[in-house]
Image 1 (cartoon, rainbow, N blue to C red):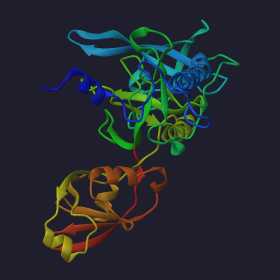
Image 2 (tube, rainbow, N blue to C red):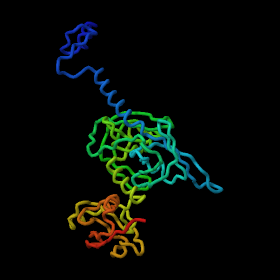
Image 3 (cartoon, rainbow, N blue to C red):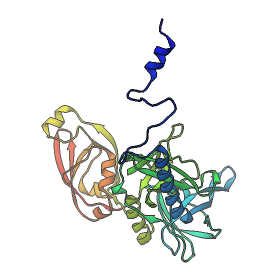
Image 4 (cartoon, rainbow, N blue to C red):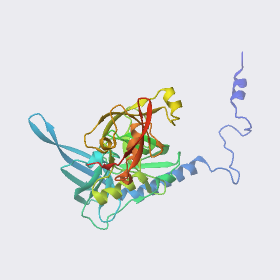
Length: 347
């Protein structure tokens, strides 16, 4: 039978010769006590919140939706943040897109009617404008410099609770998130900073008080799996929305689906991937039809870049590809063919 004194001895920390309840003094140059670390963490969160919160907007919208017996108006709300002093606000497309009326309120009590400058459902981003001047702004950072594990602070209006601050870390980088339009949003930031309905469109902020992402989505039922569109992506989209009111993308006129290629084809044609995009239909008069693409063709390359999935085609059909001929590599039955396709702008 083991004595109580033996159990107490076994539980005693190795190398601790101090009386029970006492703590050793930290040697010079060692890590600071936990209390100091907590203070530093708190100061970082408080400082970032102080810098950004004045620019975080509560956005309320009205939409007309079809219902039995006609149309009815429904209300919605979300978040956004001012990024120019003359009243440009960045938010989500699913917050402001398609709204018949948009109103914006800032923490200092200012309230405005807002106009939609433009929205892009494919990246779930939108820009709205209010008529204010010298408004508080949030500084945009650079998401390419973000590192996994760094502090991430979300600010928004979940369930209408204005300027709610939650904090966590950047959990992962380079995620892909399916937008409501069906396209993938690339380079999405994953964080465990808590998000709830109403946070959509609000800023994800670094400890330096710079916006690194636009809070976009959560996985329902999960704990701490939240996503933000990277601010580098947002900067490109915002530029196009301000110029054109929308994001310009290329279009070739095919409907396709991902398909797996046989190993024999992969070896014979020396393909980089074992999958491609099978053409299910070709629109009459489209660039694909003009180039001679046919139903049943499998697209495996675009200007020398491998195409393994439909998402690869979406990525390759950016604004810079509009009007520029591309060599599209396809497998047709037992042949590999090259077709010259010139994308046009997606209407």
